[in-house]
Amino acid sequence: MPTLRDLLADGRVHVVDGAMGTMLYGRGVFLNVCYDELNLRQPDLVRDIHREYLRAGAELLETNTFGANPLKLATHGLAAETERINTEAAGLARDAAGSRAAVLGAMGPLGVRVEPFGELSLEEARAMYERQARGLLAGGVDGFILETFSDVAELGAAVQAVRSVSDLPLIAQMTVGTDGKTHYGTDPVVFGPELQAMDVDVIGVNCSVGPHGVLEAVEKLARVVTVPIAAQPNAGLPREVGDRKMYMASPEYMASYARRMVEAGARFVGGCCGTTPEHIRAIVGFVQSVSPRHAFDLGTLPAPAPAVALQSVPLAARSRFGAKLAEGRFVTTVEIVPPKGVDPAPMFEQVRQLKAAGVDAVNVPDGPRAQSRMGALLSALMIQREVGLEAVVHYACRDRNLLGMLSDLLGAAAAGVRNLLIITGDPPKMGPYPDATAVFDIDSIGLTNLVSRLNHGLDPGGNPLGQPTRFVIGVGVNPAAPDLERELKRFAYKVEAGAEYAITQPVFDLAQLDRFLSRVESFRIPIVAGIWPLVSLRNAEFLANEVPGVSVPNAVVERMRAASARGKEEGLAEGVRISREMLAAVAERVQGVQVAAPLGRVPVALDVLEAAPIEPVGSPGYTPPT
Image (tube, rainbow, N blue to C red; front, side, top):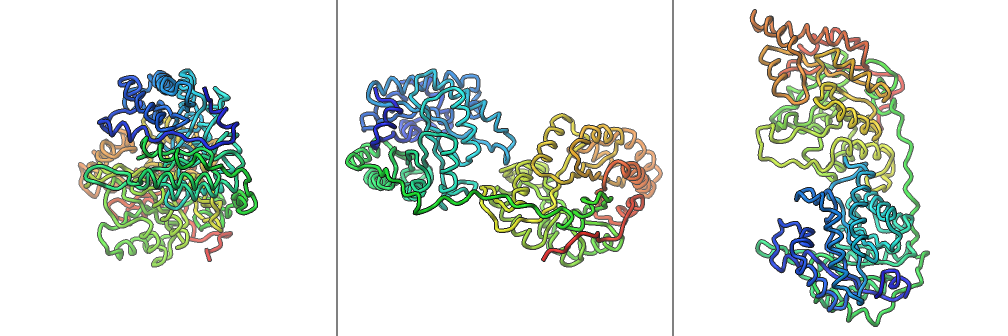
């Protein structure tokens, strides 16, 4: 019986099987079914497909476990069955292979982003992959194939998990897009050496954009790695035919490219999405007479030197606001909500009042409460150019994917936007368009990591930008969070990711703030307290009951109730008094305040700020951007 170790040692070309999902779908299995559970529910169906690939000439059979990790199985209520599903799947492939083929334990991505761009830690990812690997090992696999990964860090976690339970050979495969790079922009000439450093036995590319793109990736890998190479492309790009996606590459086309991949340096070839036993049979016929290239020409295309993170621009030199934070001076900002229409003139007039009063910056929220308003980045840019007051841009993850955010931020950096407050964003169901979709491709922790990398001259894929961006990185934090331990944990992650200051949700309870500050003292970053002037009893009740993340004590509501009973003006005056009292109290505890201008009423915010130490705009040490 050939094992993967045997096939690695013989120096010849070997053919891996094709797509399991395509075959199951062709047999009438609906897409909403958990394909991994079929190892338990319909074992004969899975075993028969393995045998079809074996009869087509495949020498390596992959288990039907691409998504059989605890996280993906949990969506079907099957997380507890992880080990059993993987063990049974390995047994089915082992039974079908007999003495004619080796069995590979297939493992795919978890389906969520991992750190630094996602909430799932690498340690948590390793634990999930370890459970899957143990199940596959118990079922009798000859080795492992980690495939369709777009994040080198996640693949590294999977490799570590497998190595912690087994020394069997391991194939590691990334997937690339139409640009020939991974989702994060990492080129094969970069990830190839990174994977080889993980001590994997085979490095390859699978899925991706079809044979042409995979061939180009193989050609690059062959010049920068010395371990065997694998190539398993999709059967071309899918096309919409009715309500189905069809892969149109013929078996002959796939086979001709498989031969070219072998000539370029691949030793293991097969197929991914859309490939069938007919494709594998054709591939076997085309590559039998071809020898893989053994002489790797490492000098033709040298691997680029690893991108080196640049020293970030000192905080004091990035913006006036950043300079005051760096020097430990008290900062004052006022939040102005962008207009709902297209006329920025009223917004400019509000900001001119703030500038005349000596406020350090204007805070520009990004669609708060999922309201449709003028974009925060463009509003901030117009404010800075028209009025000359720095803006702190609230930038939300809700509406943009990672690529869109990266594009936005690079453009903002070039245009002179410097101060950011990174937030996850309110869900659309809170706003007037509840059926609008939310992206949430990454959250505020992941975006903080991304911006921190930009400040060190690197994009998410580790590619150099040429020069670092100059963002002052702020994050939101809620001292009144219902689950304070989770909030503190997330805040710690944000600080670790690169946060340089934090702005709190509106503070109405001093004791609550003190408890929070005592817990975050070790983080050693400036805290800016949110101050929200109440304008009426109705406003107080609304904040207390309908705005997530805001806690208004009963005592404050009762003060507003008593004052509002004497008239609107008395209610507003009491709201200002409460805010001024809170500002005076927090001024000794934090490094600044963000005061809201309720309903756009800037004079109210400025009345509150009379209790704050306002300095003239401008700080020594700040150098305007060139």
